[in-house]
Amino acid sequence: MTAFSLNPEQTARCDRLRELAEERLRPLAEAHAEAHAETYADKKEPGRVNRPLTEALGELGLLEGLFTSGALDLCLMRESLARVCTEAETALALQGLGAHPVHAYGSLEQREHWLPPTRAGRAIAAFALSEPGAGSDAAALALRAEPDGSGGWRLTGEKSWISNAPEADFYTVFARTSPDAGARGVTAFLVPADRPGLTGAPLDMLSPHPIGTLAFDGVRVSTADVLGDVNHGFRVAMTTLNRFRPSVGAFAVGMAQAALDATLAHTADRDAFGGKLKDLQAVSHQVAEMATRTEAARLLVYAAAAAYDRDEPDIAGRAAMAKLFATETAQFVVDTAVQLHGARALRRGHLLEHLYREVRAPRIYEGASEVQRAVIAKELYGKETPSA
Image 1 (cartoon, rainbow, N blue to C red):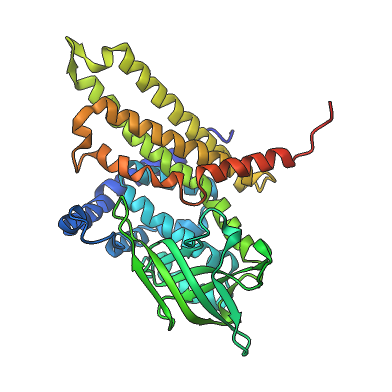
Image 2 (image 1 turned 120 degrees about the horizontal axis):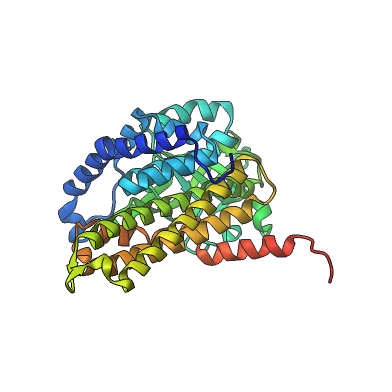
């Protein structure tokens, strides 16, 4: 079997995931949106964590899959959920991103304390890497971890654009323990949300996602809070991002497929110019382009995930290609779908209006498209090539 073929068991699992998303998860997302409809529409309240939805993901065993599944299975899970309920997909992904460093690098005590409630959806996790002046340039972190004289540190500074902040129960925080050392001077810490000196505020974003800022005013951490080794936190961040970057592409593929499905149904049913919309060559060729790009993105994502599962040496470049191409493709497909649907797609509550707002952020978070191109170029030029 090649990396580009799904076996019957995988196909059946994807079908079942879409059924669960339709029956159990989307109603919880819709109930949450309805409860906050007026405040979201009037821009009076930023996005909030949907705890019932996260707990449902735990009850269904999907959060457990974040820690027991390979990269390809994670991609299949995220793509399947995104095709039906982007809110469920996002809640799942954020739990994985925030808790994976604990799973991979945490001490026995850290894992035993935090992972069971995270798997159950009772504890909300968050990945706190970005800062006001260090988003894509993760090596330029300014959050200071200063020795406190008793073997620990005091964290001072800010984090921004942190998903699930300020409502998370714990944060994987990256701070500078060695000044002027670049990527080699960063340490990862597990910081519970109730630590004295840690505060946060929500941000009002294009889509009502739970995203906020964090302020650290001398927050104390000890060696027991370190994830991995001191001054090796950049490795914790990059291995986490390399695992999840292909699955960000899977999220994008799921949204693209949802937009494509809606467009196929609409253009086959819509009367226009004496026939159906699909009978217009200008329309059918655009739909063909949407389908081709979506399938190409899917295959690139699957190949990158399979490479990760095989522990191949060029994972960083493959993951970057998958995220870059899939997220850019999803933007094109959703935008084209809106154009082919016309004004109805712009009405609040329409699937494509929702996807149009959702699809923009993945081209920025976990490394903007420009950063992915830089990673790809570095991988290409870093390889030895025979001289002419």
